[in-house]
Every structure is written in C-alpha cells, then in structure tokens.
Length: 188
Length: 82
Image 1: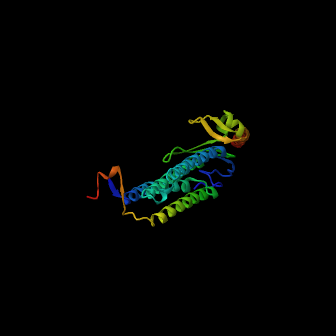
Image 2: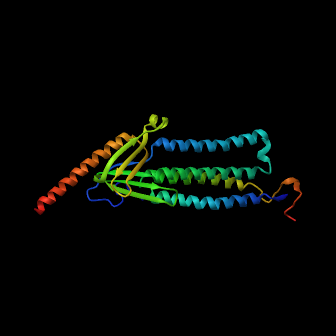
Image 3: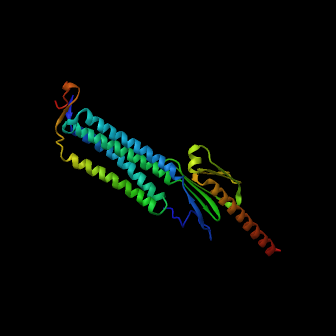
C-alpha cells in the first residue's frame, strides 16, 4: 500500500507537501447516483405491494426477493468500483517532485513523476457552474519531459495548488542553481 | 411451463459467484494500491459489512422457503418435471 510518509522512489530529504484527490463533490455526485438507483428498488417494491398486497404470501415472492438482492448487490458493487476509481487517483506534491498516480479502469495503473525544477508552466482552470460554486478545477503542469503535461483533475482550490507548485518549482530551481555553482567553484 | 422454485436460487448462486469474484478483485485493489490509513480500511470494511448484512438477510429468508415447490409459467402448457 502507498504510505503517506513513504512515496514511490522517495529521495533523501524529500517531504510530502500535499496529497490530493478529486474534490469531495465528485464523490458526492456518485453517492447521489447510488441513492437514486437504490430508491428505484424501493419504488418497485412499493409498486409491487400496492398492486397486490398479498404478494408477500405469493409463490413468486422468493424470486422477487432474490431479484431485489441481486439488484442491490450489483449497484453496491458498482458504487464500490466508482469509489475505488475516485480513491486511487492521487496527485502528490513534494519539495522535490510532483507525482501523478492514475487508475485507468481496473487493470491499468499509471504512475508519473517529474522533478520540480523541470516545470515550465502551471495553469489552473475552473470551468462550469458547479466547479465555480464548489471551487474545484484542473491544474495543468507543463514540463520539459517526454510527458510534458501533468493534469491534476478536479482538485480542490486549484489556484492555491498552482501557487504552491510555482513557489516550490522556483525554490527548487534556485537550489539546483546554487548546487551547480558550488560544484563549479569546487572544481575550479 | 412449470419448474421448481429452486431454479431461481441456482440463478442467484450463479450471480453470487461472479459478484464475489469482482468483489474480491475490488477489495484486493483498494487494499493493495490505496493509501495506508483509515480511508482504505474503512471503505473495505464498509463494503464487506453491508454485503454481509444483505446476504445474511437473504439466506435467513431463503431458509424459510420450500424451494421444491413448482411455479407455473405460461399457463402450465410445458411441464419440465416430465
């Protein structure tokens, strides 16, 4: 399992600054969908009982119970899949790197990382009514690497995240520059 | 068409086999790849707990049913017991 204090390929002196997932509102929408699907089951049960109040003593009632159990277990599993998809997408900012962990479906997982001093540009965007109201959006990080864009999707307070990354990237560039100068002086 | 009520139970068992496989896969995923902390364990425990309650309720109810009864379908013109 991924530990908050131990991240992939942790560098000496590396500290985790922030661990992010999608905004809670994204999960809230999925919970609402589950509640709607569950309420359909209750509506059908009520409809069956209203149509025939003696249905509980009917020969077909066990089959109806089993069908209802199948439906509930199916939507419960579907909701759990949805939660896992939300929970396993993680973006980590440390004082050395940004790390992008994405679960794409069930049997596909991508982990990308980039050093802060290679970050060229950071953009935050909030598009739409709900993102504006609930203050979540995307943070797009442009780097000089082969995968030149990291996209932090639907994270909370994207402006704040952008500021953090920019500040850390500048500090890391200065540190890298100082180390190179020190090495150059040492050589000379 | 007439067939024993137990056929529905067999269909339910078949559904449980596939449901169980996917559930185990999902639990394995969240415990393997999730962050070590309350979130992963609480989610896994919550999923197992709710599923267990539903299954216990269904099996308790199923224990009170005579599954060898025949149910009639389509007017009883086809009798699968013959």
